Image (cartoon, rainbow, N blue to C red; front, side, top):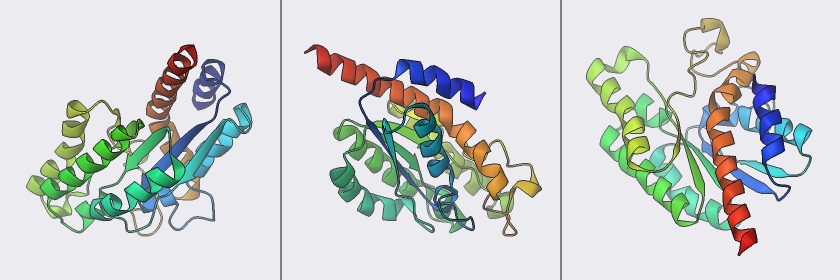
Length: 211
């Protein structure tokens, strides 16, 4: 199914390059995996197989990153790379540290607005928490993502680990980070939203070329 979606996209996207900035935490950075084994690198390989050199995926994810850290890092990355698409996949570390969901929402909102102000398409990737922090905190945390997705024109992925969350064999010994064999399922989860974002980029390029 993933290859079919990629093939369909290959017939729709222009030859002009699109830059995708993946801005996440250890779940995107490939913590505990061999180098360049995270889903952003798999995304780059898949795109290269269809359109060599047409798209550039920049993985600016950092293990341990919180949304507060993301707010401080994102402006420089936007200025340096000038991406067409920003995949915002932060918040898990806020939740694991029990940080206030209201502050997390404000930080994610600031990053969405930063990216939008530079003309980027934004893919917002949601996260869910294990129940040990209590049902009230867990519910408040998880509500942040759909609330922002309803408020802003973003492409929304409700839960990065949706396809593997209930499979203990899909995780490393820490129970938090995927094993290498599970990484393609993360790409399958985020791909529809990324494909939709790239199609919006195509429309923008097409409009600009007609001016």
